Length: 189
Image 1: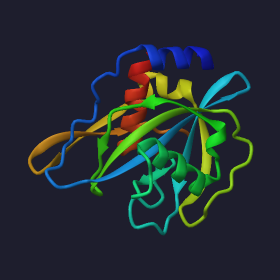
Image 2 (image 1 turned 45 degrees about the vertical axis):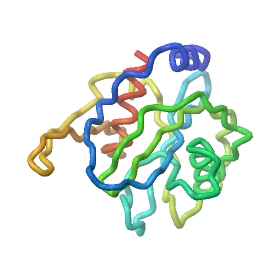
Image 3 (image 1 turned 120 degrees about the vertical axis):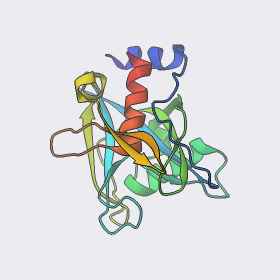
Image 4 (image 1 turned 135 degrees about the vertical axis):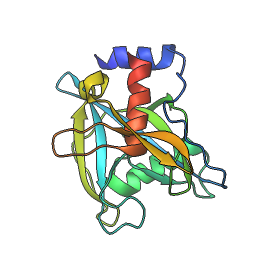
């Protein structure tokens, strides 16, 4: 899929219902993440981060750059762009926001909105080691192939929910990140 095809499919297709059905009854904090899509050597790639191991929430897990909404953030897109620059040094001037996916509720008490964007420069990251251990890219085609979509049923408060996994090489991509990638792949296929 070319960058142009990706943009057209993302912008022209209706947003499908999310595979992520879990809902909390408690008050949730707002957060946003950026799903950065990079065109590299005529191939689309998804930028992901590995969270620092010393973090309280989701240490060492694979995620998108992002974080909680601050009072000074104009909107959820501003949150995703600010957090991306803080975590990996990717500036908003290199990011073309296309839109967003449905929000996800996490076990850590957040409602996370994924913002999808095309990134024009991914050569040099300035990683904040307090938050991020590693930045890596995965070919988008990996997430578009259904054999890489694994769902494991779990029970929480007597209700069945699916946990999503999309392993790639040595990376175990799971949870909300995998569910977001699943929803993106449904939209694109």
